[in-house]
Image 1 (spheres, rainbow, N blue to C red):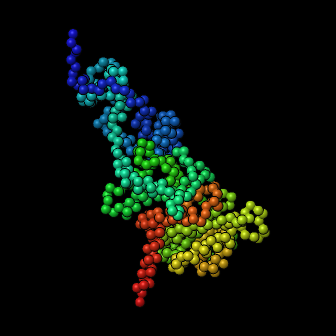
Image 2: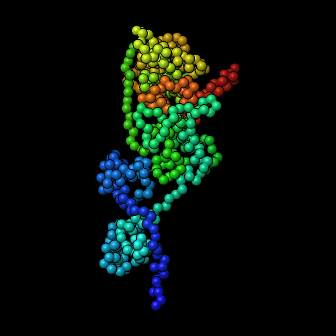
Image 3: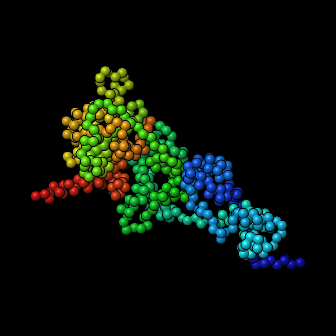
Length: 459
């Protein structure tokens, strides 16, 4: 007896295949509800409950996507079968209802129903049993159209981005400096060292490409694409690095805290500062502060308001540190009034005269000898109002950037002057949006050279 003939459409159907995996937890509508809840500010735990899935599933969805909602969760048009229609088809198919009758009840074309029953059937056992959940899973899996990421396809672009995200800090003949840190794939803990890196932001990298490769359109990428390559699992372009300044591995809401410092003695207030310093029209006006570390260690920071050029002050501990302090003697931790005065003076006097116009500080005890500093350097010094760090916004922003290299709760006294100079050089070589994506070093160099040309051409 010969084999029975099959319709061509049946022969064209999908044969038995190996299962590509288990069904996904939650359907498209569940994921849509989950990310809408995340957008309202709910935690992944509460958003999962709101979407009707288990809390571990919601946490997994959040981590797999780096805290970013997927772009493929837009609502489907009526062109495609919904899960409700597939459930209705499964019930009708179990009742042996014909294809054309199904099409009339669902108001669909008979060819659509016929294709659905054959293409998305559960064929793991070799048969053509139709189940709604399995059919929905097959349809969603086949509807994906993954696009090759730009960083995957362009090797030169990937190297450029990677080097500016995770490039090392070096001194001298290229010797790498900074603490040795093992990363376990999560955000760094509190009061722990972080790896030193060049750490350009994705926006800086994106905009700097236009200056470095003005005629090469292939060397272009948006900052959002860089973030996705870092945060989203499966993008596969960049290594998950700890060189974003926040150290985050997921996108989460930011929390900010404000701190102030008590007023200690009467000073010249910021209201007396020249107007040219307020509008950043002329370089030479500086803002300063200390960043503090473990066991009273500290590093001084000086930032030029116009060019954002940064100087770091080495404040080593004195030899008697740890011993009882002599009454009215210098601060043994290394950041007393005398030590800060000498450190500022030794750094400021190396600058050209036109770059020494003023210095703004908060009302901290480390500037108790500001009068002597002004006499020694000729630099006018002004002080912010109490509890008003925003009046030194440039310096506060720079201190936040420096915390990537010098985290809170770590010992800052272990770094030598050469290492501080290397970090300052890395910061001064980053492009800044406020400077038209030039680096602070380039902006300062352009100002000094233009000043010299004006002097040379003056009658």
